[in-house]
Amino acid sequence: MSLDTLLLAINGIACGLIALRLLAFRRGKKNHDYCAAFFAFVIIAASGTVAIRLALGVYDEVDPAEALLNVALCIGVFAVRGNIKLLVRFSGVKKSEVSHE
Image (tube, rainbow, N blue to C red; front, top):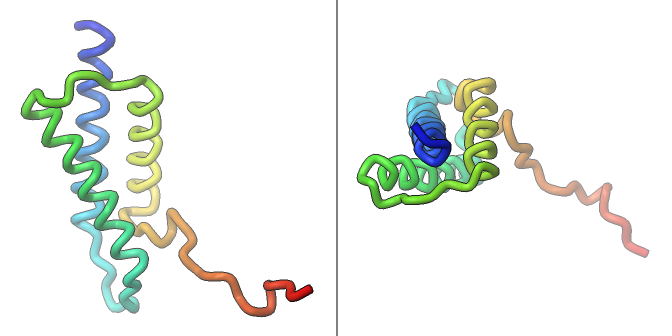
């Protein structure tokens, strides 16, 4: 097994796991956050597309940095159990924090 094949497998598994974990997230009785939901949708679509393209053999080459980023994101998504709001802060800037000079 060459390094390229290994990177393709690692990247495909990481992207597939990211998409599946985010799809399996249940927010329970918490309030719906449209910004976080949209961000999760974008990540699901992007990582799912990469996993599907790798499975079909359309994705030919993976950069080691890309695979490392996807593995890191996968670890982060599983660490917060798919709750994207815990992974990324979505609160806006408060008016008291804005300086009007």
